Image 1 (cartoon, rainbow, N blue to C red):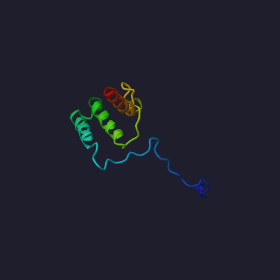
Image 2: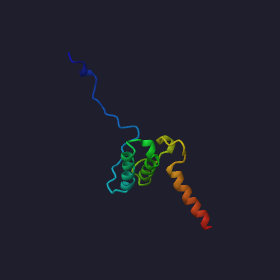
Image 3: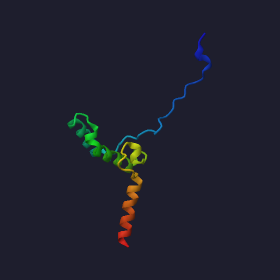
Image 4: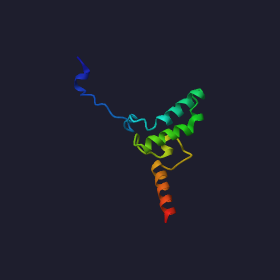
Length: 99
């Protein structure tokens, strides 16, 4: 007797963070190339390329290629501002300097 008969149909579960859209327009291509080049030069030591990886993620967030997250959720505990907060800070400071 087959025991899987009564178990029902398997339903796949999407990833917790959702999918990451491909960068079809190449908006973050240079940031990606810089990061990958750094990894090659440093024998895949990602800590040596930390700022470049952060720049790549920031580019993806700014171009809506990934959800805006707090840096601490992405492993950058030394910077707790979100990308959204950083961009609103820049907008606020430029608006207040004009008045």
